[in-house]
Image (cartoon, rainbow, N blue to C red):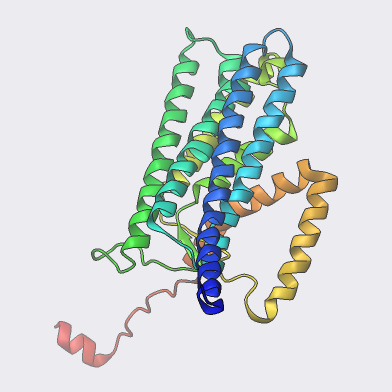
Length: 295
């Protein structure tokens, strides 16, 4: 075997190894979703007797969802940087998102809030389960629409939202799950610990999940940050990431909650600003010629 052949073989092996990197991050995403579900169920088992110990499990589950968001971001970035995007990787990533950002958050939300406060005989309990189910449906529809737009970048029919690489159409499911996870990470104590007030808090969580589901299937624009770090802005991205990492390390409860609220709300703010900026149609001036035409 010649040296040139050996170099080609090593290069081919290296290329195959690069294809495993995005899938490895996706696998880590799935693992975090799996652990979040396990810890949520474990916390729900002891929520009535040992609220403080249950809060630790809920906090673990919330942190796992936060780490899954990091892995989900990295797998796409790595795939684009190494040019190792594959069809099976795209599909695997979508299934991972359904598990980690669709199923895991509702199990956590149910165990921490609805199931901890209301029993099955209570009508509010049934409403809460229905809201959580609709959240999963909206999340699945959001992912299906995203995959369809990625495969068919052109407008499918008149009136369809135009695909823009810089923006997402509708709230992505990872930050939607991230907002709930950041709330629970901020206060992991189950809501049954707060007595009668816990019931009102649980209703607020239901309303939040309903709003998040609506935002996911809406056509509001949310920044994708895919162009961040290109050109001269790369130095600012590095500084920003360093500041974010230090902030999370020191004040994770506050930093993650504030950033989650900012991202989820910025699409609504952009929409309201766009409505205010729309030019009003100027009324036609009344002239003698117009009067003659009307008469």
